[in-house]
Image 1: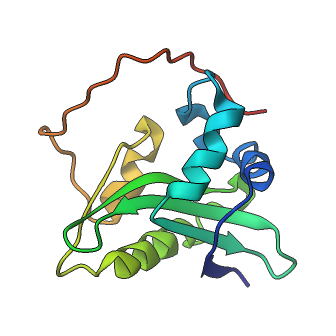
Image 2: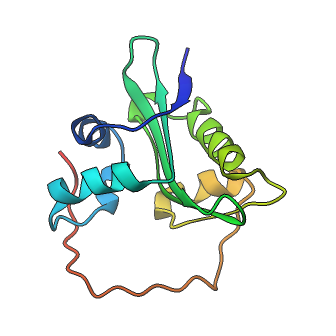
Length: 143
């Protein structure tokens, strides 16, 4: 049985998890080892889905003001545990922690392959999201 808890992850455990998901390809290579601990420390919401033996099989990290919005920065499930409802459960729990469906709008940047998953959750593509970044961004996969 998979349990979901609010907890802070260590960088080592999260990097190991990224190797077992497609989520690791969303990060730039530049200063990756130094930046992951900052992400994990400062996320407003940090959820972990674990097997009974403690293995991390799902993660959701998000930023929220707990009043109006939640921006999901990371949502991933171990490839061996996909299609078991873990991602859906993580999203539901994060939405509730942030303040619930009546008050909180959820935003995220979706990997192209994950769009069908988010659409099944009832999310819609948006044309009004803006971005600004002038940083070095070398694509790589966490291995």
